[in-house]
Length: 131
Image 1 (cartoon, rainbow, N blue to C red):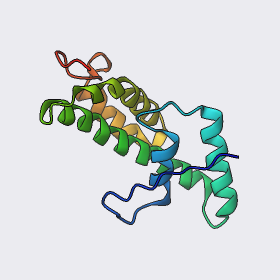
Image 2: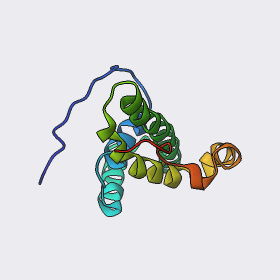
Image 3: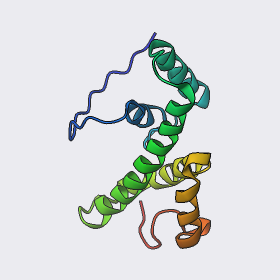
């Protein structure tokens, strides 16, 4: 069996346990098969019986949406400010993952904001920025 072998402390903040799962199973740089992601969540929930599975999955959707919004903006910042346009190659995946997260019922208010201010055809890398 392969194990995750990456530790990324960055800001070393304490947060909801769903955030780390959002980072691992909805990765902005690599496609993770849905079946594998579901197995990871199921295994985590089996190891943490004190967690309510529905509440955890709701938190997971919210964490995914928050993370993907932040990372989509990060790719643009890296391209524009730091002169590193190759990160824009991850933009389409990040926006797709954000769209998936916004379909969760708990994300409906945020989805409404996106629908009002950022129509689906504009959800992507800014025009004129090439990866």
